[in-house]
Image (cartoon, rainbow, N blue to C red; front, side, top):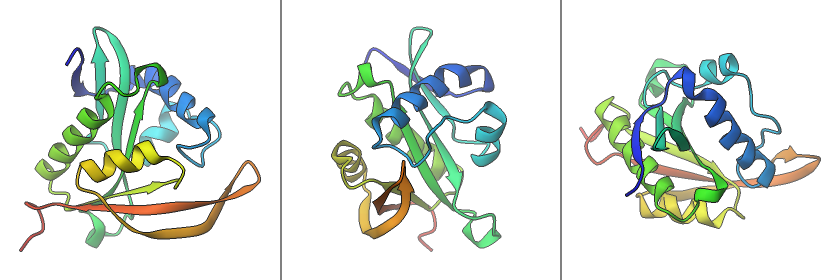
Amino acid sequence: MDFTIDAFTPVDWPAARAIYQEGIRTGQATFETQAPEWQAWDASHLAHARLAARRGEAIVGWAALSPVSRRECYRGVAEVSVYVRLSELRRGIGRALLEALIAESERLGIWSLQGSTFPENAASLRLQERCGFRILGRRERVAQLRGIWRDTLLTERRSQVVGTD
């Protein structure tokens, strides 16, 4: 492995935002059409379990968690985001980030991770499956992206160590 994974900090946002913008441009990663400024992104993600993949000083990928609800009963459920620089795909970075994010989420007491993935994003779905996610169902025409209705697949990974009681 010629990259490392460590904590993602506010200083990393410009580089991470550029990677996010690359994913947005593919039309296969998110319903977002523009990467937000730091304050908006920060407010919409959990303060913990933010990771960066680095090759030297360069950020080549990132992963973070978003709450699915602010209700206390859902404190152990989070939505996963993993983004890798397009020029760095198929080098194990996404898998390393997701595995590290899973470990960190369990350390923090999160019992269920979920994803919302476009069905056409086969690489993301394969990655999730390799990391223990399963498809729960299809949300048909759930939202529009650039004026086109899109489906998403809802995926979930239940922890084998948190919330098993």
